[in-house]
Image 1 (spheres, rainbow, N blue to C red):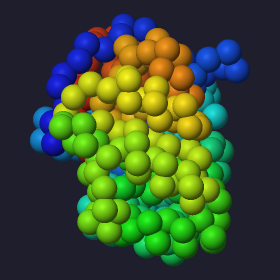
Image 2: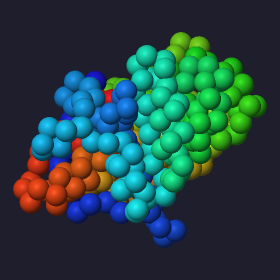
Image 3: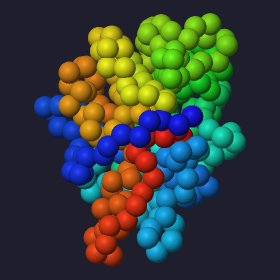
Length: 254
């Protein structure tokens, strides 16, 4: 589902400090290749030479500045086959949170065993509140994503019996999962919603979040924002070739 294009800052984002919210790079992976958001879904990221970016090189370079990365495992989301071997290697030198398309509790544990600090369970894919409770009993190292449609209602499996994002966040926190990731699709973040959810506990903004939104995190009480790495890839390409390169838009559906 396309997100509206937004201007990107000409200053690369920096990692968070104790004085403010944390900015976390998001890496989309499909079949071992780095992807970026595209107009109709993720597309493979390519250097100006036409070559793929090595995911291990990308992670190594980001890890020089960031201690936490957010990995979206498209194989897990789209095909139910998370890239566990890749996750294990990527987690060796940097902390990772992983959205791997978890439908059932046992799949979350597979992701954690592979080295993730947090397995991210999404309202759009996780089968039911019962599965969330099962996952929590197996491990507390979880975050819960509330994916938001353009109408600002949550995308959720029928067993959740609600599309109210605030109610879904409450259900997750009642289970014990405190880290909530709000992921708007197709429009800018609803900062009033972010604020209301943040009152209840640690809240992150993903999806349509861009680094130009960073000042809004503090205003809304969010602990951090999760952003795509198009600016980084463009910067690396420019430094290596001496010419500017183009990248995909910074706001589009996964």
